[in-house]
Length: 122
Image 1 (tube, rainbow, N blue to C red):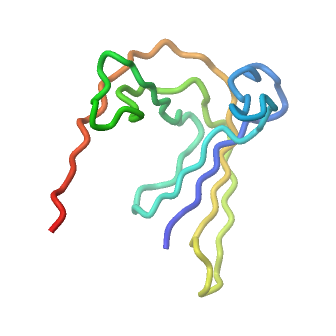
Image 2 (image 1 turned 180 degrees about the horizontal axis):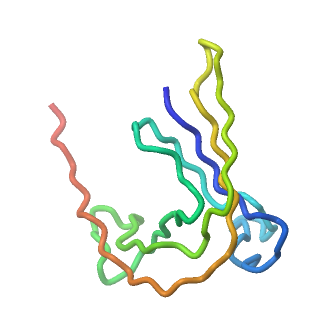
Image 3 (image 1 turned 45 degrees about the vertical axis):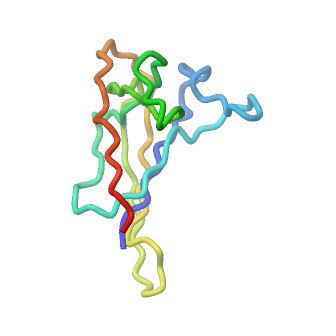
């Protein structure tokens, strides 16, 4: 089992709304990102910033043309966290975590992502 972590814009402020547009409709969303985490790492806490991923054409691998090439610390900062635990044996997740975020731009460098490793099929 694992954790389902949802990062949402704290709707008490509208700053950063242009960064919350759904690509296929142009409508605003309050869901910034979601992660499925099956590790034993602790859940995000206030102050955490989830990464942004970017694709820079000149660094793209022709074998993986749509893959991201760089990441950076993102502009959305967690300000509060709510956790919901599931005790049912048939549940897909042991915990659902909702992280409310505020838009707080930072100037962080793009870092190259590790090269994609492909294992040969046996």
